[in-house]
Image 1: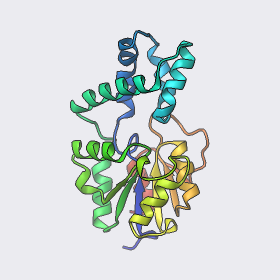
Image 2: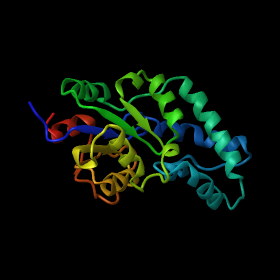
Image 3: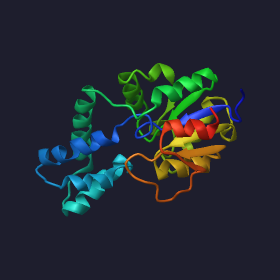
Image 4: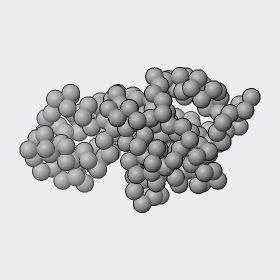
Length: 215
């Protein structure tokens, strides 16, 4: 069986790794450690938002002036400690990767996270050996919604973006993949439904994405 594309480029957090729920778990404790209190429901507003925006949104909500570097350091320490306990996968990850293996399709990660941190998370979950390469925010000029990570991932797979399909959970990621010129963009929202609905296809799971791709 042949498919109409040559490579697959994947987001990481919220698509393969169930890390968005971990962020919700640690958020209230991180703020308490800095002497502030926010309702747990507030942290839903941070899902899918680049970490660089967290301090602005938190300070806006609290009418405070927490230093962004201090907040980021506390947040990263808490998240790292929580991930050492185990990083859950989104449903269907291994089946999806098994399917890519059967079709001998190369695959890359395109993430708004730092490359080394993404690779560490993949290693913790046993997925690093199943991914050909990782392109993070630190390897390009601009993060999502700019197309840079998707363009660079395709380039390093020695493919044109028009030969690749992209899977992402967030609207920011979908905008990036579309701007990169990906052949097909499938959105699989995690905790935050799409507001844009700009992806070529919406799917409820990786299993549904396989069906859409004819795999």
